Image 1 (tube, each protein chain N blue to C red):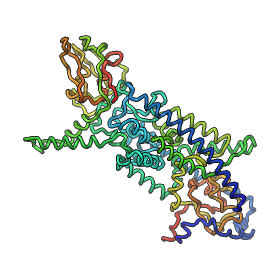
Image 2 (image 1 turned 180 degrees about the vertical axis):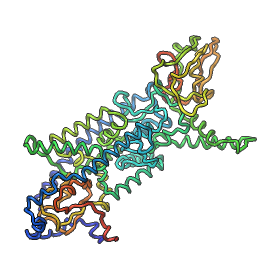
Image 3 (image 1 turned 90 degrees about the vertical axis):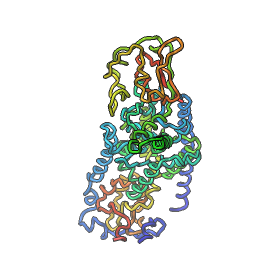
Image 4 (image 1 turned 45 degrees about the vertical axis):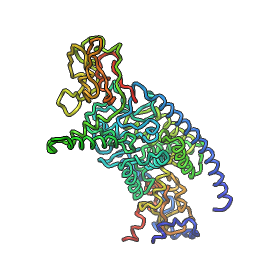
Amino acid sequence: MLSEYFSNGKNKEPLPPKPVEEMPHTRAGLSFKAWRDARKGNHKMRNIRWTVLVFMNLLFVVSFTFDLAILEGSLSGSRLVGFYLMDPFNSLQLLAISSRTGYIAMLTMNFWIGMITILIFWFILGGRTFCSWMCPYHILAEWAEKVHNYLVNKKKIKEHNYHVGLRFVFMVGFILLAVLTANLVFENLNVVGIISKSMIYGPSLLLLWVLAIILFEVFVSKRFWCRYVCPIGATYSLVGKLSPVAIKFELDKCGYCLECHKVCLVPHELWFVRRGAATQEVHFVGSDCTRCGLCVDVCPGKALTYSVRGASAIM
Amino acid sequence: MDKEKKNIKRREFLKGSLVATGALALFGTGAFILDNKAAETIPREDFLRPPGAIDEAHFLSGCIKCGLCVQICPVQAIKLSGAAEGLAFGTPYIEPRMQPCDFSCDALQCVETCPTAVLNFEPFKAAGLRAVEAAAAQPGADLAQVNPFEVQKVAMKEEVRMGRAQVNKSTCLAHKEQGFKGVSRGQDFKGIYRSPNEDASSASPLREREFDREICNLCITECPIGEKAIYQKLSRSGKLVPHVLDGCTGCGVCQMVCPTENASIVVEPY
């Protein structure tokens, strides 16, 4: 149904929680604990994702080092076998500046092709899919998060959470800054670009900035950059608002164990997994989701799966 | 969500936004001041922007620092600036004394590849087309004999204006009426270029070339543009010295090949 495609069911009345006899562990004839721990240590999706991420970033490096025309440039702007790709937030800033300075007419056809291709590509695969499958900072942040969680569990540090809407404040702010100064200000602070370029063209001093962010994430606030700052991620989450590729949640397979909630980078998007919170039998995770698959790996009842939204309606 | 929870959320958001705005203002002005400071130090003698670079202010507002120009350059003349160069961070530059642009890509590929047109290809395209038209319009021109690509590529490289070479008369060997024999810049020098005197398609190291000149004229014989840019002039005092013309593109090959300890011919950026 088309209406289901657009509505996330957030404003509907929640469905009543399932009774014990309808819970997946009862149906499987297991104790809740045994059922919950059955898939512990499963990292299939994560391993696939890390392989793709490392491979794509190495492809940039290899293309330059050995002068192969496969994937040239960096994550700010690149050419895939001669076909241009542009970072969408960079393009957005550039359009904002150039419409003020009148420079917009000079932008090349390759710029437009690169921007539109990237937008279409990531719209199909789901906006922030870029973050967990391509962004080299993401993998560092994942490791930083592990250390952070360890420290929190040991009660060495306190967890600090902020409002996830701050990303959009930063996004608008950086665009305004770009227009006001006629300068791509964010590119100097862009940890994604800094890491990507450091890998390809050799390390730069700006890596200290990346280190500072990582230390802040380890000791103060989990996934600070990705959750609250990164305007690239914010742009992608707008791009992926109605993406067909999404994580699908099926209530009848859910055991309310919240394992997914614990591993998720954007747990506010998994609001429906709590007992008695779901309003529909099927939910699709919202556009802040990076499709990283950590929840898919961990879900004991396989209630969370990769899916193509609307495919069943078309078939 | 009940009302109270919503209010807490809203307050959290407003508080965060305030801090975020502060951070933005701080980092924004910081980055802006640093980049502008860098812009003030340009033009500097040691560095050139790649061919076709538009004026520095617009260049800074449009360069996304992707490095495509760096990757496509066959002689690796273009580099991205770090903190040491004092240019806007991550922007491309050429250091002609170490590795100049020698036009051996034949088509200004760095300019053509630039997606944001801060290296603007339009003037080169126009110059190329003009040249082809002019060649075809020449009386007695045999259209079958005109190779448009050859005409175009010469016209395009002659359109480049990265700067203009200046001769330092106090150190120039020709001005001192001295010759030069041997390998310029020594055996360890890594710079490469395509010599106009050889029939080669790609560049080769400067150290592989042995020169023997009664009066030093390396800057003249190695210039990829030729007599439109520089020629050997008989000065009033009867010396044969290099003389730079308006056709100089500022590619910097002369600056690299110059055998004196510090280059006696230096490209000054426009």
